Length: 446
Ligand SMILES: NC(=O)c1ccc[n+]([C@@H]2O[C@H](COP(=O)([O-])OP(=O)(O)OC[C@H]3O[C@@H](n4cnc5c(N)ncnc54)[C@H](O)[C@@H]3O)[C@@H](O)[C@H]2O)c1
Image (tube, rainbow, N blue to C red; front, side, top):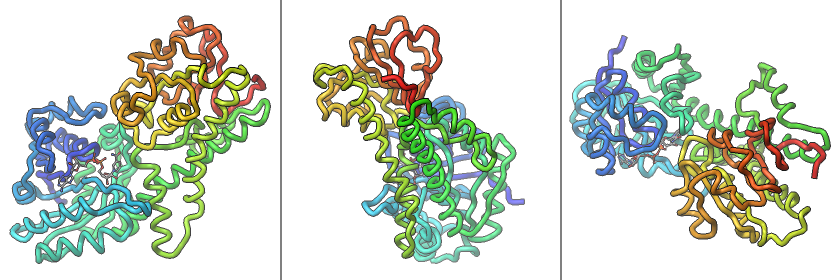
């Protein structure tokens, strides 16, 4: 049994800081490394520089076990295992850049050169298949002059967390994926997770390469499932009496399908799903195969924005008014609830298209207003709350299923307003005495 007591985490971003704080909270001595001095200062004061559910209290609670710094030497010398969680941004061809990863490997390699004793390097950043073996191992051996498997260990251990519930997901994973250079490396990692997770963890252990392919395959499969549901919604909207939600609920009861990620709404977005789907296709091209299904999923997902715009135009055109005189309220801008992140958010794209088509648009989001402002600028009005956003609107769009939108006060809504609910949050709500339309169903009304 391998007993790890000290862990370093390189890259204290949206994922890395959560990982570091969770380990620290579970009793590990954790040293975090980042290049951002402001972040480091805050963390050392027990303040989270990142907005993520539960992270502020965890960073505060774990302060005694969590130290952050710029210095790799101290972090690598004084810990047994290092998790690398730096960003791997997407390149134009859909693959992931190793720019930040390589910088960290040079620094880690230089410390490994001086270090006595076994040190396990764990790549948690999402990387393209073949990266860990061909680039990470190669660079670490070259810079340190040491041998992987003898002097240091290597593992690929990506996380399947969702922003907004990173801490919960990290501590309660469906399974932990471990790509290992040797059995010893996998055993060390398995032991750390057994002591950290709150649930009874299942492990999938395999080669580095298979784990790399598994990571992007899993997200690619989920994007396929989401897109299937959205395609079905598009079809049902064309057929009087059809309701995609009733159908997908039934499909989800089949254990071969399952009920998660099969609820129609808007297309997927955010910092993981779109790029992992595209990376899967990029990887296939690299090995001279084709991932036609993944390519089509990406295309169909992008089409969802236009499908919604088409529907809105259809609804409003029946009023026979000029677009410029119609005011649209958009509730929600982030790519999903409980996060301020707007990266690849479909509702944000919908706002941009509606503005370009000449509608007057007012937006509100509980967390994402500031980030949205950097994209939408002064092309839209910004409301401080739901009621202010809906006041005066001819059409309201629920674009993100934030919980607070469920509490919309129907009595205060303007007479004649149409509510277009992309997530059918308000379906069946009492006192909703207005025209209410939900994505994915056709009740025959115009
Ligand atoms: N955020 C997610 O939801 C999520 C989910 C699964 C996987 N991932 C993967 O995890 C990785 C990190 O993602 P993120 O969202 O946390 O990124 P992020 O941009 O929020 O954080 C990256 C951090 O790394 C730091 N950094 C950059 N270069 C560094 C260096 N040389 N040394 C030390 N620190 C350095 C940055 O300052 C930043 O704090 C990516 O590969 C991503 O694909 C992220």
